[in-house]
Image (cartoon, rainbow, N blue to C red; front, side):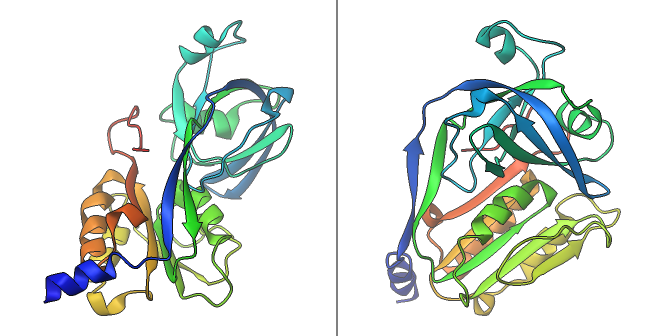
Length: 262
């Protein structure tokens, strides 16, 4: 009887996640502005006429940023440059805003976002596809580490006023919180010197079936890869259909070239 009841709960959602393909395009853009939102978190504005027609209908979309050593003369040369995936935050006809978590000088993307001179050029590829939330969830749980903040920002704009919701973000310590426009207060977790994801995993593992945020929830969980197992376990405890949730590792400790699943 319990299994049948759980099956019923998983088939009555009033929303779904719809996969949509997009035309894959590569664009050349220029760094035109930089704004530090926290000591280790920066927003940059990329501009250029190539951004005409850019679109990102899914809040969790991924585009690829390419970081060549200098100007490129072809798409092939651009695609050969080191690259990383990021979520588009906001955009217009000739501009695109992207946010970066900056921890030290490792890698290629975060140091560029932190230190590259204004006027520096990079490439943008995609998004090549979107996962679009269709319909209206009955409640919301959005949780992640610093790398998930852009997607959480975008999902938060979809939450109706008064809907049951929790937004939970892990960061290093107090003083590293970032202002978000959301209909509920953000709950900040601090991991201190513990590995990334530690505080978020502890939070998820402490949630019981009775702690469900509300009926028919949409669950978005994204952080270091270790979040996936406890995140899926939470979906099972809450009776959430995995096809109507997003649980993913945005990055993997020790692997600079790790690509988040789409």
